[in-house]
Image 1: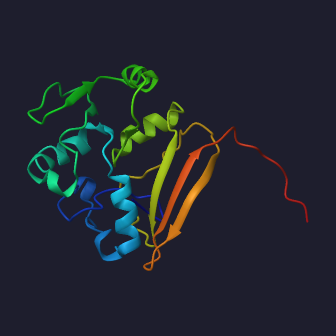
Image 2 (image 1 turned 180 degrees about the vertical axis):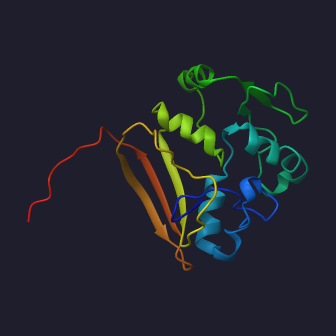
Image 3 (image 1 turned 90 degrees about the vertical axis):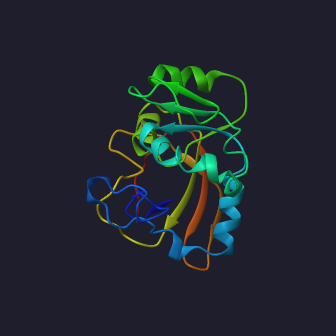
Length: 189
């Protein structure tokens, strides 16, 4: 979930992540409709998760008690990139300490691994060319300041649009799969 200017911070509620003085938490709710809910439910199908520590700490007190809203969230493996955390009471949590652990995880056979939020983690994965798909829910608003999806050091990579829907409220739901290298050219005419 991101704004037109790339902000992904605190889409779910006013108290979700106020770091940096962010005051627009909950910006997704007014733009929801049935098409958005349908795609969101599809994206919430059980799969292992890779989370940054900050996102994990937002989720850790909420999801164990509210798993009925996201079936399977408590059962899937939650991989957490952290240099400061090493344990949790939430079931099925595995802590990773660095990019090498993520590369080893990605090389293992198994199910897909999804990432939600986790802006710093996403920046790290994009920098190391470790993103296979992007599932974007682009909301028609500008938030200015806030944590951004894309940093300045992403590995140059083309993506191919595989699915897109525009909701009744103007949210663009777009799925992109990893493509090849970036091709350049010149516009004539």
